[in-house]
View 1 (cartoon, one colour):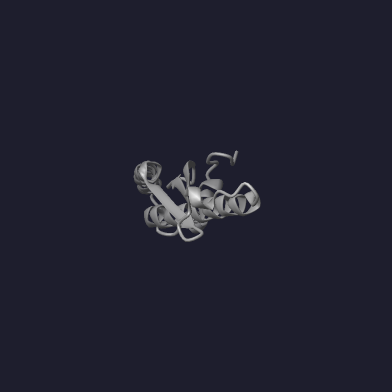
View 2 (view 1 turned 45 degrees about the vertical axis):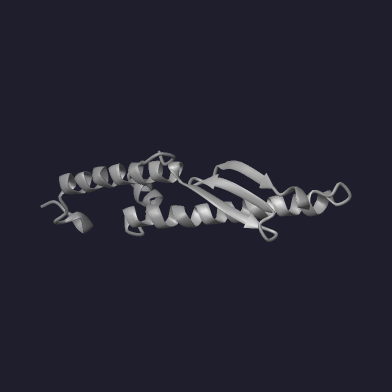
Length: 120
């Protein structure tokens, strides 16, 4: 008699089908993220950073009123803050979009046991 352990009653073909469907939905979600842009402004709107839903920086806009040759540090701080905020919003969007596809599952840990990418 073979010990089936925790896999008793699990149909491998059903599981494979579910994983394949999840991959299709993940790809669609990732494509949607790539085509989405997020704007974040700081300093009352004087600096704006635009990133994709994947977190890739696409644009920086600076209102000329904030450019002071005697105070470059403030401008640098505003640019960094805008990029950080836009990236944070992109990560939040990623979690929403990809979490909806996986139902909150950590897909990396799931694939880790299956020898997925990065997990030989």
